[in-house]
Length: 325
Image (tube, rainbow, N blue to C red):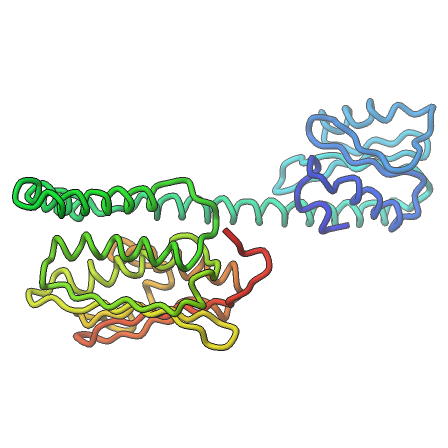
């Protein structure tokens, strides 16, 4: 019964929820109404009782209403009326209140889950929009500077830039593939190499067997952007970014490593906890989304020390039910 109410009183499983409540109470009939007053009934209500009128009374007063052997009770979630439970039969009021409370708990859980999903989607939208103006300006400046001396190279970089923007901002679904994410990574790194020149060295290797693996959208690209922006970009001598993807048994393991400035491990722990997001793009977002999709054992692993570079490891199952582009 509880699982059937997580989508709310207007959800597709409300009739199943009413059926479960009826069995639980051994009632003649059970009805559930949302705030619009639309009532879903399982069983047969007494013909001489105006159930719709009872529902309207509860919706307007938030008080219990009883007529003959039919009782209508308000369902309250977070101190707000969420709907009405109507029961016909001889069930004791104590049992009715208990079932109403269980229904309220299920509705509250559904709201919390919906809020969490909305928050995650909002974070993902923010992550998509988090493109460094500094990077955009430098990339376009380099492209413009190549228009006359090397028009072919300029055109190639412009196409890379268009691919980067399209992938970062387009309305993708929740999941993509390792192949698509690696393509976005290579596009970004090509642009950054044009901007940073010999200061940025790149190694990208991915095993063919993990290319089709489905992963949450924008999981790998932010890690690479962090490696360049916070590990390499501000070092006069530059550095190397290495991205590896391989299969380990039933898992896909991807690592993003730079030999840049590194950071205090305590700071890295704070970043993964969601503190200091202004200095490191989306690490907490990526970590949280991985854990939400795959479970607590599949978050990011961050290895770093000051002046020792940074290595971020992503481990996901190669096959996960429900995870597909």
